[in-house]
Amino acid sequence: MRIYDYVIVGGGTAGSVLASRLSENPSASVLLIEAGPADGPEAMHDPARWLDLQGSGIDWSFETVPQPGSGGSRIAYPRGKVLGGSSAINAMVHLRGHHSSYDAWAAAGAAGWGYTDLLPFLMRSETTAGRDPEVRGTSGPMRLIQLEPGPDATLMRDIREATHAAGFPLTDDPNGRQQEGAGWLDMTIHDGRRQSAADAYLEPNLARRNLTLLSDALVTRLDITEGRCRGVHYVRHGEPGYVAAESEVVLAAGAIGSPQLLMVSGVGPARQLRPLDIDVVADLPGVGANLQDHPMTSVLFQASEAALPTVRGGYAAMVALLHSGAGSGGPDIQLAAQNIRYTSSALDAPADAYTISVSVVTPDSRGSVRLAASDLTVPPLIDPGYLTEERDVRRILAGVEIARTIGADSSLKRWNDGELFPGAARDPRSLADYVRRSLQTFYHPVGTCRIGVDAGAVVDVELRVRGVAGLRVADASVMPSIVSANTNAAVLAIAERAAELIG
Image (cartoon, rainbow, N blue to C red; front, top):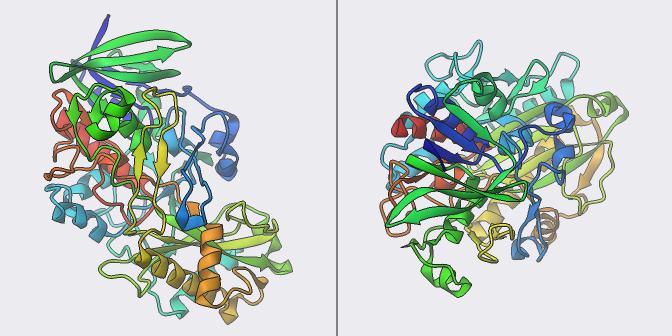
């Protein structure tokens, strides 16, 4: 039997950070277990081919249960199944979100997890140039570029100015002091190639003698004996295996994988586990509850002849974190302008189109991850509960109207030959039908093992699983509520802070 001080389950964003940071202590032995391969196809490294990775061999290829908020359809739910996890297949956006969405964690009982608490860890993860060094990192593993379009890419510049003309602020750095407004995205691209968390954190450190990587190994169950997690059972190339943890097991399998593994191991809602003949180790009703994601739709424009070189060219994007007027508190919608057709497959959109996507980034709707079987190889039942709260519907409709107003600005007339979608839909009912038909995930599931102090919390403020010694969770699942942006930057910070708490 092999014994390590720390066994980390999941080699995605959080797991890559944890393995790198914990192995900085040469006296601590660290094992990182990843269900997918250590590397993927060449498309994984090409920033322009990120959409090709969905449904590929490095995608878990989950789908949701039927969603009433999308007219009863099932929605594809990509998650990375490769070293680097979803940071190896995502759109490479590095966006922190508004400080108010972190402060909501502390207000809900996650003391020590507010924005000022996490800022040092957000900074620790990144290297930037020419930014405010008091709020931006200058020596972290993730080497970021700001995707400001070149001088010939005036379409994106004009969309940004049209956003300003519509009454919204501009920001020079959406990750800086002013997070609200329209600005240019930071991207995890280095030397023209995708930089996943594994590329940044693990690759330079895999030669450490105290760091072991076990890829292509699916953890099937936690070994919990007498109230303590002792190790993990796994299957690799059809052969069962077991490793023990002298100090701790840390789950970093994400908002889907971590609750699923806890539940098949007997940690979760007893009333759901017992009918599946799972022995209950700890009755924690919050495991798998509180699932949140950003629902997204798109406004598409037919590219004009003048815009075709841009639309057919490289990837460029403007992002805007805005108030919809239908919410309260901090900014609640995100617009992202992209020079590609980016929409649901349910829409028959031409290739020569560009997009302003619309997402509710502080949704009220909540869903769940539940077991379909006691066998971890059976995909879980994923229910994001999109648009189940009426306020989310109002906000996404308000966002669509803002995107249409921006797209109709006189400065953009030379760039498009009209709006393709929603097109003729104008009245609230038709627009709501369009939103449901075109609804997509923004690939940001969180919250299913949330931090807190109440009975529904799964982990405490030090990320320790309630009722089980020697076990923590440190990934997107611990967020009490979703951050108001793409979640990868926040996960990096969570894992950085977790490493400090553990080590």
